[in-house]
Image (cartoon, rainbow over all chains, first blue to last red; front, top):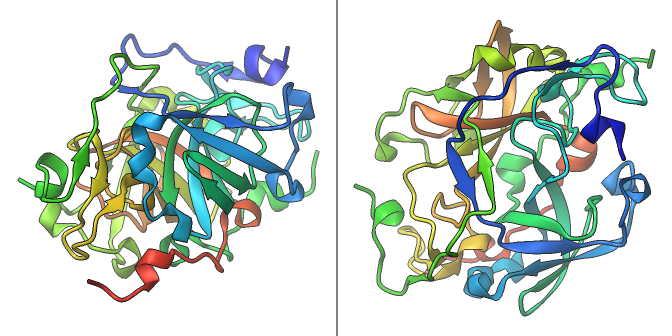
Length: 166
Length: 166
């Protein structure tokens, strides 16, 4: 049981969730990774060279036409084990309360994760990719081509992260 | 009425949608842009220097703590006017059928768009950003800090896009 996903730490703030949902999602596949427990997942996907497999449901197979020509993809997936009401969180490794929208924590109003992956191969509805750090069997929501022209901002800075800890 | 979002063109393929949804979303705010009709939206967000405003619902206000230190954000939003059953699409400007997952078209099983924006200012629950190309009043789903270390892939190539048209 992971505190950050299921519990609440000193200094964290939860809000009352809205009384209704506004839109709904289909899970369109599953992500297969070597990691079965959250504590086994890599801290930083770029530090892991692990090849993971995206298994797209056959229903959507024709949607992959042209994907093989992409060197990188944007992957959206559902962090289905996270609470959704935290607005201020205290990450274990920082100890300072930060807003949910300043964090990549899975605990957020809409627990959708975004990862940029390198495409290593396509075999039917199975895609081999490098750059994921999620649990095995994570539900897939979307795949998109990554365009360096609009998606790459190598000069970007996250100020709070660049500061010394503590 | 936009063919690509509401209609179907010769060569396009639609599939039967699943008989149930798997997860649900909250709209957490609205995006205010100068564009009221799809044909007015910029073709490429990087070509537009327009400053747009993200209006976060006050419920989530504390989630912004620390966001002001980010130079760039990932914005997820809901393309609520799009059909969800197209797997093969014929974009107007290319004329060749391509898979939905090789395109950034709003028509997709889960019509979630992802944009990388430059943060120009924060005033309470209103964020000024540069880099959006969506319709005014588009529902907001998520905001995340953009980390160059994992999100920037300036070397990325979309092969079909680099090829000559036609």
